[in-house]
Length: 371
Ligand SMILES: Cc1cc2nc3c(=O)[nH]c(=O)nc-3n(C[C@H](O)[C@H](O)[C@H](O)COP(=O)(O)O)c2cc1C
Image 1 (cartoon, protein in one colour):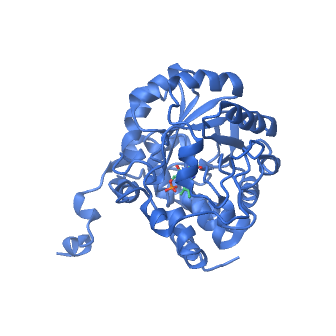
Image 2 (cartoon, helix red, strand yellow):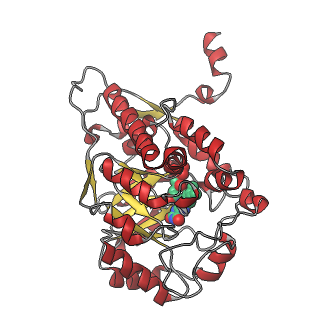
Image 3 (cartoon, helix red, strand yellow):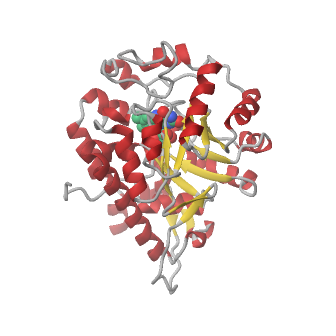
């Protein structure tokens, strides 16, 4: 284990040093001008905290549950594709880390490890993320496999009818090594991404016609709760709940799909106000500090998802690296809770937040304050 890595940013730098430019850029990049990617971080800086004082915070817990599954902290592992690009053990290593820290892993359809192997390490803290294939028989067989392996929810990603324009990947001619395959639909003929480009694969295999009508079918074949991932509008969230969806991930896919899309943090309050009574709401995109987690929870999220930081941990040190990333963020969350006067997650409420003054976000803020 590398003892010099103290922050998630340190893990980012370590991953950059270890990975090829093609892989690092695939993990880190966003769509087009990457405005949404950078705004994901900026939206956290726009909020400031108003800590409560003289509260007994000698005993603190960040434990919670998601759709009835207990987790030790409100930090869940977002689905990310092709984890074997980061480390040979790929998704298996991530699962081991999730299990060690008692949190939940969402496994991507584009997993490079067999669903069953990953699930067997997770003791039920396992949800499966679904991309819907044009061929509904392939889709059905993937869902059946995930359910049989013990997935407790199906996370349907709805912000990717087509793949975003990832210009770093275009320039780098991103491709998978010949030896690497997507393992979930492996039984279906011709459905491996093997050395071919992701964009071409997605265009060929995934269904851009997916619509609200398909939700009912999906719920009927799944028989487990369905979560929608990639919602940014309150009207879509309401419609999803009416259609029987049990939770929503407010997300812009880490800035990788529609560039200039709103940040999840900006979209969150309206969605919370519209549906929080009837569904759990999670959020992702740019969470890198314990204070980011507090802000997301204060706006009404039940938990946050981590995408890239998990891949950085994996690249740095396999399962140990992922564990350490989770430990760092859990430690930061615990400290931020203490300093905000919160001993449990229910104490994290909207009144902890105010707008940061615009000057506070500028690079020259220091000199303004001193003058
Ligand atoms: C390399 C990479 C691959 C991803 N693959 C998927 C995927 O297969 N399915 C999915 O729903 N989201 C995918 N995402 C989006 C993440 O689930 C998540 O929404 C996003 O990474 C959160 O932002 P963050 O990386 O800033 O934490 C991917 C993100 C990255 C960075």
